[in-house]
Image (tube, rainbow, N blue to C red; front, side, top):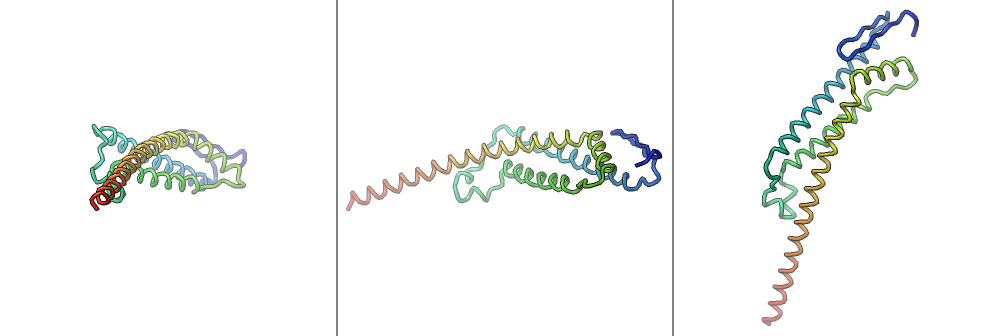
Length: 170
C-alpha cells in the first residue's frame, strides 16, 4: 500500500513490516492450511494407490460377476473411487473458498504465497493421482460390464435352448 510496508515471503518463514498486518496474516494462515490439506491428500492418495498396487491380483469376488449383486460389494477399486470423489469435492471447496475481487494488493500477496508454497504443484500432483484412480475405475467397470454382458448372453442362450427342448418334447 505505501512505502512503509515491507514483506519478505519464503516457504519456511516470512517477514511482514506493516502497521495493519492482521489481514495479510490471515492470508498466510489460509495458504498454510491449504498446503497442509493438499499434502495430507497427496500422502493419503499415495498410501491408497500403493496398497492397491501391492495386491498381487486385483481379484473381484465371485458375487461381483452377478449383475444385480455387483453393486452391493465393496471392492478396493470402489473405495478408491469414493476417495476420489471426496477429495475432488474438498479441493473444489478449497479453490472456491477465497476469491480475490477488486483488491490488487491482497490478490498479489495471495498469488505470491501460492507460488512460494508451491500450492499449484501439490494440486497438480493430486490431480494426476485422481486421474489414475479414474482410469483404474474405468478399466474395472468396463471389465465388469463385459462379464455381465457375457453372463446375460449365456442366460439368454440357455433360456432359448430350454424353450427349444420344451417345444421339441411336446
